[in-house]
Amino acid sequence: MEQSQFSMNTQTADLAPAESFSMEVRTAWRQLPEKTLFFTLLAAWLALFHFLGNSTMGYINTPSLFAWMYDAYSKSGLDGEDGHGMLIPFVVLGLFWWKKNELLTVKHQNWWPGLLLMVLALCLHVLGYVAMQPRISIVGLFVGIYGLIGLVWGYRWLLRSVFPYFLFCFMVPLGSFTEKATFHLRLFVTWVVEHLFNDILGISVVRQGTQLFNGLGTYQFEVAAACSGIRSLVSIFLIATVYGFIVFRSPLKRFIMMAAGVPLAVIGNVVRLSCIICAGEFGGQKWGNIVHEDPFFSIVPYIPAILGVMYIGRWLENLQDRNNGVTAAKPGTSKI
Image (cartoon, rainbow, N blue to C red):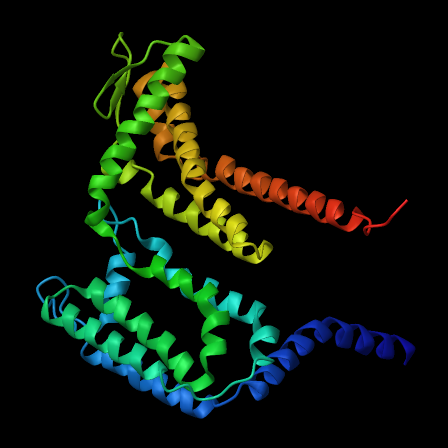
């Protein structure tokens, strides 16, 4: 009997976290104002983009903008640099959940100027539909949802939803539009690697455009557009942005974290390319290709970049703590 009671208590304890989370979800749902109005309007808005969202039938035969977006995110090769778009909605929903207490305590009221945002969004979609530019329609899609938030819940919700809603910018597929930027990025990364090996490590590496090889001809690697690092650049910039907005309230510190994402992504790409060149030096073209194609080494650019994000964030936190300490330690003005 005692053993059975102990077993029941153990099972109850195991289920407690899940039940408490479930209760938290139900509580937040009950506290959410104007649910029926918001989700009815949201469903109608999404239906518009599903049935009349895409006019580029020659590329993908569907009227749905969401199907076009999925196709863009799931591509591979030169245009396959937008896979992170599938993760953004989950990141945004997670951050909204993180801010739920702040949002649910904000005074809500219908804010009719939100209609102006929705009209602007509709104009953007019409422009994108007529010009056969789905990317413009994607911007219209998210601007409309943002306006809908303001219309139903008020401008205070809009102000407090700027972040994480800003992250939806990363859902606009860039595709081949990044080619000009990636070309200069490829040139810069190969230039850094050339000088790193020649001037610092004393290993002879020859660069021609975006090609790297040695004088003996034992290896030759082309930094192609698909390997330009634009994916890691966007990913690290996204990580730095989320970190900055979660940890800091100062706009300056948030901007520093966002700006740091760009050089950190470049450093990560330099590290990955350096690993490939080192493998080529020791084992020739075969070893270099193994490192280039190995799934483990594909995450190498993220390791120094993420460590750099954490280090810069910690440095800014320590700087903030020191400033707060100095301010707290200042005595009041007194006469001796």
